[in-house]
Length: 295
Figure: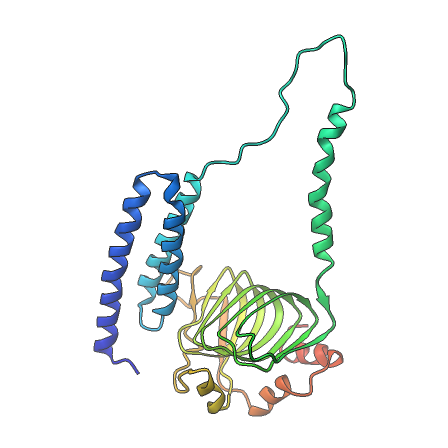
C-alpha cells in the first residue's frame, strides 16, 4: 500500500516529469516541422502510457488534465500533416474528337470500398463458444462477436475487447490493462491492473482492478465486486486487497454529483461467479441476461 505521504510525493514527481516532457513536445511542435511529427507521435504514445501506469496514485483532476493535453496535441499534430492530394482529371477543352468512355473508366475504382465494407460486416462471429488457452498468447484482441461465450483460460499481459454484443466473457486475468470499446448488452468477468471503457452501454462488469476504472462515452455500466481466488490474482501480480471497483472515473461527468452513467453493488454470492464461469451454454445466455436485466 502507498502511504498518503508517498502518494503525494509520487504525484508531484510525476507532474514535474510530465511538465518537462510537455515542454519538449511543445518546443518541437512550435517549429511546425512536418518531418518531426513521428517524433512527437512517439512521445505522445509514451506519455499516454505513463499516465495510464500512474493512475493508481494520480488525483483524478490531474489525470484529466494530462490526458487533455495529449488529446489536444494530437489534434494539432494531425492538422500539421499535409493533406493527401485528391486525384482528379483536368478538364480539357472540347475538340473535334470526343472520348465518351473516359468518365466510365474514372468511376470504376469507386466501387471497391463499399464491397470491402460489406465483406467485413460478414465476419462477425455469432452463437459460438470460444476458448482461448494458449499460454504464449499474452496480448489478446477480441473483435466482432455477437451472442457468444468467450472463455479465457490463460493469463494475459493486456486485453482489447472491441465490438462485442450480447456476449459473456469469463476467466480474464490480466497483468496489465484491459481496454473495452464498442461493447453492449454483455457481462464481463475480469481482473486487471487497469480498466478503461469507451463507447459502451448496458454492461455488467464483475471486476477486480488495482486502479480506479475509467469510462468515457458510456452509459448503464454496472460494476460488481467479484470473489476471485486470491491465488489467481497473485499469478498475474495483482494486489489482492486493492480493488476500487466502485470508484469509477467518468470522463464525461464533471459535476460534484454522482455520475448517472454507472452504478455499483457489493459482493455477489460466490455461486453467481461460478455460474458465469462454469456450465454456460449458448442456450442459457437469454436466462443469464434476463437475470441481470440485459435481455
